[in-house]
Image (cartoon, rainbow, N blue to C red):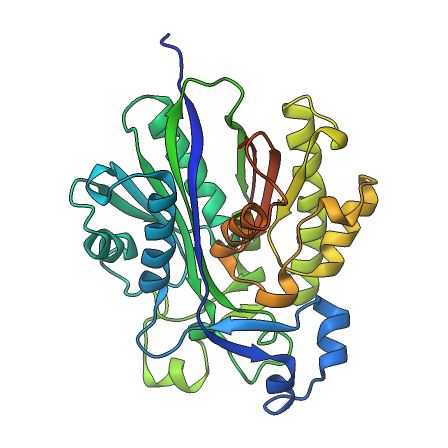
Length: 330
């Protein structure tokens, strides 16, 4: 059996829209308060797409930054994977728009749909192409415009979501001291209705009734989602540590999906590691779904929290139900 190559992250990019929606803004449209939102979720503000912006435009901006950081020209890309649950259109794939805008004329492209776990699902898939030698340069993007599907009459969920994109470039590395060390992905379809958008697909096509009944917005069973997220985040941390034969002390930073500050705190308590080892930016961006993990990765790298040689754990969980984890050496 031929030896698998090591896939390494060689460039990281991110994009957030300029428009900011604060908790004070929500106080004007639903029965809530800044204090209630912060205590329950940790969110203080989130970025929202503006006119002319979409999942594809954000993905393109993040992808362009990532390939520039990697020193890769668009035409050198072999594959583009976009993880999203808010595509620009039902068809074609959002990745097609990204390819066109970047000028990545030689790249194969497709989308991955795994909600908040989507980026790590896409990262896992991209790794396989690099490890087997089929492709040498893979652009993996997580991009979601959740605000387009948020019900701003639902006080329990509308306060959570923001828009953003994050991206990484994967390339083969001969350096055994760097690269992606481990990936794990799982799903449980029996929990599909924990988080879902009821209408707009082939099961429940768009109609006057579905619009009137507000079925094109995200619906969420908050308490069930909370319990699921707490359980899976803790399981993923343990699984990644055990599978890589690592201790908490050997991890420089854990970058989890930014869903709720209380969920993150519970994981830190279980594994007895300080909160400063857990990267948190939910206060400034909210839950950005597939963009959440790469957005935090880019920010942590840019701010010097991690750098070359750092061992980083990435954790995500979301609709589907899905959950995923990765360990990488930068």
